[in-house]
Amino acid sequence: MIKKNWIYLLFGFSVIVYFTSAYISWKNSYDIESKVIKSGSGWGYEIYVGKKILITQRVIPAIAGTKQFVSEEQANKVAELVISKLKQKHARPTLTIHDLDSLGITK
Image (tube, rainbow, N blue to C red; front, side):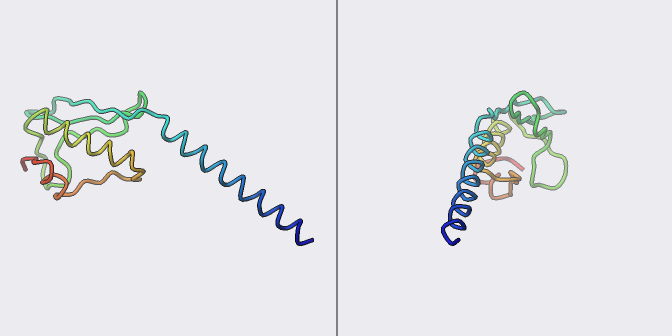
């Protein structure tokens, strides 16, 4: 009886490991890309997963107000940081003032 329980336990564990690895593989199979866009008098960006838009950011995140990025380069730097956070399995790629400061983003 005890051997039977161990067999069920090992089988259940094997199923969990299989589906977890399959999910991770599936999640990593999508290409995540960014595109810098013109936004009002400044710049913004879009993040694509596959061919679908995941994020459209027309203003600088993490700061008060609706200020756009002053250059394509700034928008691209922030978009690349968001992509790196997405690839690190962050459920929400939240940006902070510290993140912006580290990239030299003008506020």
